[in-house]
Length: 241
Image (cartoon, rainbow, N blue to C red; front, side, top):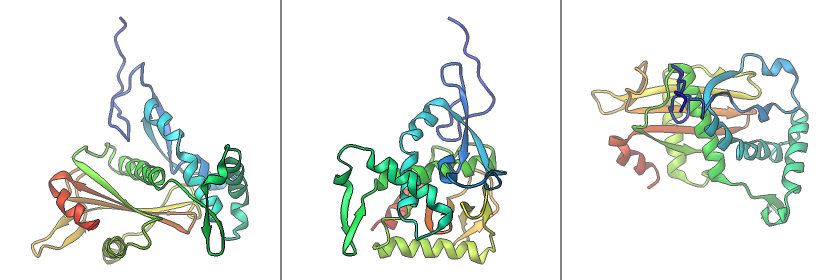
């Protein structure tokens, strides 16, 4: 049997080494589907990270869920017309798509898979972490996503406000991948100070108690990822209580 050739780089998502059987691919952060209908200048300086074929293939199965979600929730933004058209075509081409229709404000809406959306947010968060620290997120961390679908949960909204304010207090600017109209983000680490308060610090990768990431898609759709070390898992569980 031939010896497997390994790369010094690792997959941003699962952390594996690349081999002949699981080759290195290029993953765009955010995913390319979000740029449908936009001119080339919107795609300049997009973040890319190394990903293994297996992870790339698995995410390809659900990537369109976020694109479709943004396209369907388009609020008469002409720049998103092609995105919306692709979303409608993708949804309606599926047999029995009508089963996804739900009553909404006196009309009909589309039901989306919130678990798939959360997985895409995690993917982008892990990619941003790798891009900043040149290392995959340690498996010592558990990731919590707070995003669309959590609007009625006052406890979750409280935590979003708390961590968002930490970004503001620390004067952390929004960064951009590609174009600010498509994707903006803020990523930082937190540690507990002597007063028992978690504050943003310039910390080593995979060394902080918490890692937080805000993401803004197409200037409207917001998501926050919170990564907590497993020994702090009880604190993270409190967020859902």
